[in-house]
Image (tube, rainbow, N blue to C red; front, side):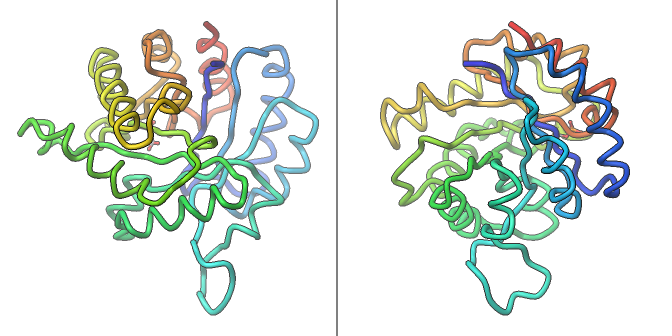
Length: 247
Ligand code: PGA
């Protein structure tokens, strides 16, 4: 499986800043065929970027989506609005779980909507520092997967990102050993819930990934790429992340 390197820009970059970034990476990334780069800009940049990346090896994703099809939901964005602009959607990022109180039920409904509409969801799971210290990380992730994947019949498009909360934006990434161990735990849990398809699901690591440490993560048996926040905001840094991920 070719590594997937997914940029999560969070609440950063105007439309013109997004265009300037992408115009700088198209050429260098066109020479790298064995890695799949995906950019998740803010909603406001999706439309313009979708025109610029057309015909390149770069794909686009949204950082969130609402599960209702349409209607009176002021400020929300539905799947039909993003469907023609991108092919990936991040679901259940820990910042959304924390700041916007997204629970496993809402995350499950979003996943169903993304899958039913033929897009690829990136489901984020990860434990807090308290649960790591208490030794309950496996249970927390088991619960997030059990509830998140409830009643989901097709896992063909599913991507999982293991993102320990204590490693996000802290500069303190998980060790590649912990990331591998947790990715295997995730794969085994999906095997318990859904069977053999678990072997085909890309599992990414996220949390303070940079070009200096990405090789250690993608070299692990059960890690198939990375979800990257701050190190994805600079075009040179993103190109070197993708370049370093070639295996
Ligand atoms: P970070 O963010 O790379 O800045 O730690 C990762 C994420 O939140 O997806």
